[in-house]
Amino acid sequence: EPEVTQTPSHQVTQMGQEVILRCVPISNHLYFYWYRQILGQKVEFLVSFYNNEISEKSEIFDDQFSVERPDGSNFTLKIRSTKLEDSAMYFCATRTSGTMETQYFGPGTRLLVL
Amino acid sequence: AQSVTQPDIHITVSEGASLELRCNYSYGATPYLFWYVQSPGQGLQLLLKYFSGDTLVQGIKGFEAEFKRSQSSFNLRKPSVHWSDAAEYFCAVGAFGAAGNKLTFGGGTRVLVKP
Image 1 (cartoon, rainbow over the protein chains, first blue to last red):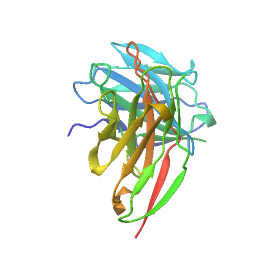
Image 2: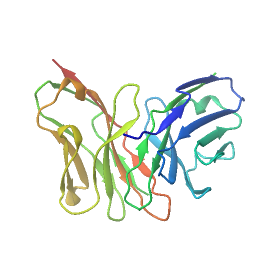
Image 3: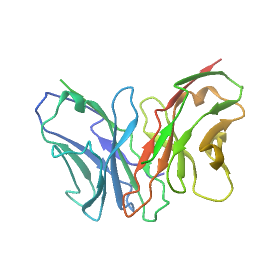
């Protein structure tokens, strides 16, 4: 069964450094999402992306965050200057077209900012 | 804005016993509701979803959920729990509009299974 994959599985970085989290969507999926889960808290929506544009973003997704599809297959989340409070599990999710299609989640990247 | 509440943070159940996980939602329109399960070190796996029609929906791994509009609830049930059901369970409501379709999650319920 096709799966969403994410790399790296874990990343440790210093505060102020840039990080790029990568996601490989299921091949026929056109809608992409990032969510995050701070330890002990809810899974929170960050951003949705379709047709090379952001469809919707949350208040969390400020100017320090960006997303892109650099090569037509990968979907990346960049954090330009990480803060301690960016430490979280970041999940990528993807789905096909159609308003009721299920979002399929990757295994997540655990980011620790020191 | 939509929201989801899962009142139980932890539930401990004996293997073979029944399980019910509670979920209450708030959403201004017809909700699209989901239950996901997260095993340790894994991503979120869809158990089942409700969009319309029969209010009792069947999912994978023997789970079912019932949508009750009058109670704004979408509780998850399993008649007989297996040790492999130990995991964290998340209820979510979908906001479908344009291309956004974001999910709003509850806080999760961690299920422990006793032998």
